[in-house]
Structure formats: structure tokens, C-alpha cells
Length: 154
Image (cartoon, rainbow, N blue to C red; front, side, top):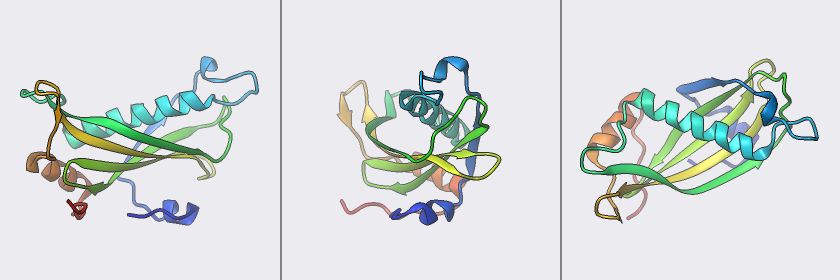
């Protein structure tokens, strides 16, 4: 799924969203939520998403998904009193990786405040190596998302 502009983001059907409570300590001297805090919000969204999908990381054999790349576009300021949600979707399942797209959105006006694109890799901590995305994980994702993304070229 290629995202070229803001309209592409608005057309994504996100099956998962979680409210974010903005704390006073999240706000910097300029009166807006610090960019580093927004990455923390995205991380929280990922955790809640994987709970909803029914992932139990790490698996008994030490397998899990780990973050290997994160890109964030900050589009609008977030202020202390804003009411925001993080929306999360796995948009692509590859051979050894999955790609997620997330947005922080204002609940009141629908403005997208920031966009996060993350690549996560299948990884076995016991063997210290990347792994192929197991069919079990693919089925959990596909069941939750109710779609069948095509794997990346190997």
C-alpha cells in the first residue's frame, strides 16, 4: 500500500484506534506535545494493536516482531487540551517483515496530526536471527484486518 498524500491516509480503513491521554509533562516550552512523545504514543498504539490481534510476544520459542525502521511526519501541532487517538493498521505482510501505518488524529475535527510508518521484522531472540513471518501470525493479522495483503517480493 503506497501512501502518496493526506487523501490516501484518509481513505485507509483503520480497524484499530486507541485514545491517548495527553499529560502535562508531554508538553514542551513551546506549548505543544514534544515530537518524542508522539513516537511514544505510536508505540502505545502498536502494543494495543497487537493485543487486539491476539499476538502473545514473545512466543515460547523466543519469536516476536521487532522494530527495524520508523519514519514520522509531523503535520500539525498537538496541544495539551487536544483530544487525540492513535489509529494503527498493518498494511503489508512480507516474507520476513510487516509494514504498519499509524496516524495521530484529532477526535474533534479529524485533522491528522502526524503519520508513522514502521517496518517490523520477525525475529527469534533465542537464536538471535530474523525469521520468516509464521503462517500463524499472518492468519491472526488477516482475521483482524479482514483482508489478505500480498507478501513482498522475496
